Amino acid sequence: MNELAAELPQDTPSVPVVPAAPAAPATLSAPSRIGAILRQPMTKLQTVVGFGAGLVTIAGTISSLAGLGAALPSKGEVVAVVQDRARKPVAAATVEILTPQDALVTTLTAEQDGRVMHRVKEGRYRLRVTHPQFAAETRQVEVHAGERSEIRVLLARPAAPSVKTVIAQSPSSLRKFFRELGF
Image 1 (spheres, rainbow, N blue to C red):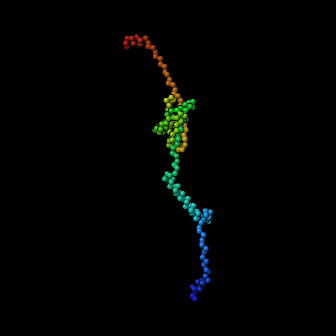
Image 2: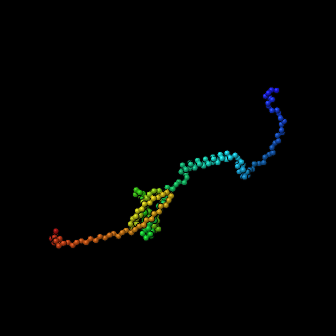
Image 3: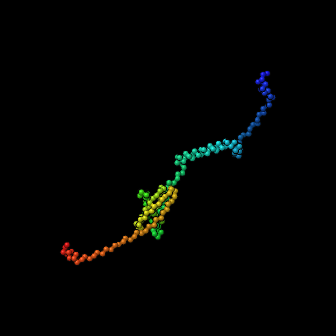
């Protein structure tokens, strides 16, 4: 025999192959499926979780860039409470909201409780409050996005006009004389 043939294993007696019993139909219940998932190596589970987290992150970034998420509020609310000096509400007062450059934003009329409310963009504003029976008042207000800026305006009755009494002097006799002559 040759050397190569000596190294090859010799034929061994063959073992008869027994056919396997027919398998029962595969009906896995929910607990056995979860058990099967948990018996998987952790690297596979970690891969699935990592892949899912990556997809969520990418989807969140795209929706944020596309403006699909909730936008931050850019407006705030101005609430003006108009009262007289006795702290009673002044109804039908006119409230003008102006920018610092005196551009008119809106004109509002106070309700029965003396209140006006309006949403404006964040920034500084000037409120001018007028009423026919009161002197006009002006106030500054700063509005922050998502917040309410409340300001109270107390109106005062206008001061009574001062009356100046001028007493004319009676003309002197010399003036009377010339006036009678027609001069």
